[in-house]
Image 1: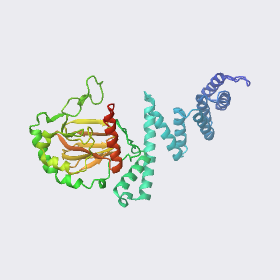
Image 2: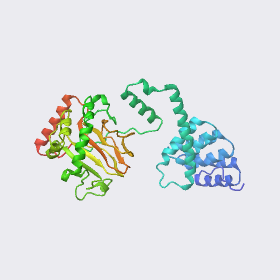
Image 3: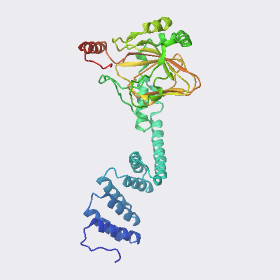
Image 4: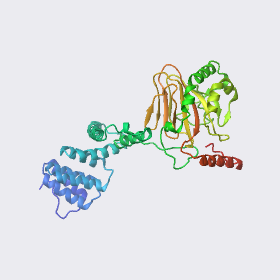
Length: 397
């Protein structure tokens, strides 16, 4: 028989060669027999299992093909081609749930293919379309069964529930804290804090027009009060901040900086100073509070980044917001609304942009993370005081 090997042969390479010859000649049963002996000799060789799956498919043996592909995956869970063929097989058999699960694995593995072969692009595009259609059906059923669940819940619960459903559907990522200073453990890692934690928002929002007028008067003749927000140390390597380094594309006028008042600016902005004095600011010598007017020039983007410590909440009071501006924290994007304050955890990845033709201005300041108790706030202040007194603490926290 052309391409046959002795029955006693156990060399998987020779058996694979005989099987490939049989496939080319249309002798599918012989091919399956050769590949079966080959995988018995080398069960860890996933390519041999895939070749056996090809022979089984040629014989119209769907169960045999699936068993061979599953064996390849059992040998190596990262076998991209085995997963791909498994997804296509389940789809061909109209087993949509199993096809969806397999396609999810394929698409995840595909993110590690660099470069992606051109021949796979249309195949993966079809897999994404199929997966998106399946996800849509899941979402439709959830919407039908749960109804408008957000309307039945308070705001914090509604936001968490919406994030849970969207994350389960693969529509959003759940972000965690990344502190570049000190991390306080076990605090909730929420992107935006519930406004109920800040009953004084109404008071500072009522001062929006006065604060904006003072800011605009300051910016009309800022002197050295307006300076670049990004000021990297000399010798810093190129990074995502390089284009903003020493640039007024993102400028700041500080009223408070690292716990120290900028008295000349406070004197020029008495209503703003009074509004800040009325709120429960955190006071940590050398660290907090910080408050400043943040000026973002037209067509400027602040890259995704995370802050120093989760012991604080960052407050934005929008003052000048042209169309085309946006702000993202984690998986939630918001548009600033003039006079509408919000609070967020800046140790969760966030970014901002101004795609308009005019500047955007926001009053930014920090307060304690609302989940900290008064006793915990005292411990944090005591820690920094003692660490500083040691003479060795260089962590700004």
